Image (cartoon, rainbow, N blue to C red; front, side):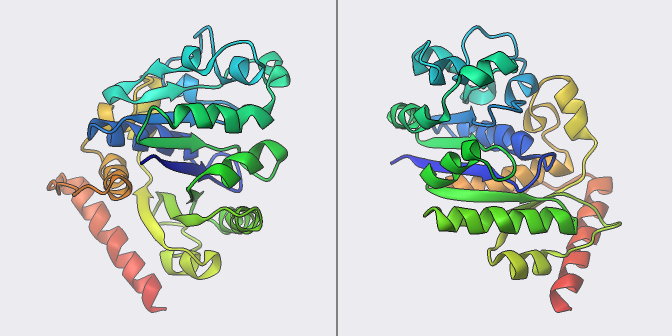
Length: 263
């Protein structure tokens, strides 16, 4: 049975595309037929992260009726299948997001998991991925504005009949964290299913156009993303003893969360 997840956020720059790529890569490594789709057609970045920016056919052409879905599917790391959107504005203008349902209907016949990178904010293009997914996962940064925008996205998702599974706190730091995990859960009314720390290796991996879980598998962010992916796929995550520096960071981060929950 296919399960479809939409990764969404109330504002841009939260890291949802990076999470989509890395979650899909890990789930595919379990032997699950996994597709990741860039439905952020106006501000597409998935192709750039994976070195697919020059491919001949993208989701833009499919939604414009110029090519079948099969021609826009590319092989990614660990066997994940990638359906990128193009980076040209002309392709975006020609694409009709109303055909996204038809594209999904065809893709789900070939996979176990479909993970959709949704457009940030509230727009006509962004409503469809929220409505057609089995589960929506919100990506929140440790700042109040991100949480407020995520709440708007949650409310919209529920208004159109969608369901929010939970939230991922991304780019978590010990300094200047305005909101705790407890506060996020209280305001959004959903569980925080994962906490991904700020990690410079995310940018380093992006420069190599390789998912961080492949390029730097033992980094703090990779380990936390892998835990979330295992949870989504229903797998047991093999705990690996972290390096000393990472261990100290995670220990301190865990203590700060516990304190936040007690407040």
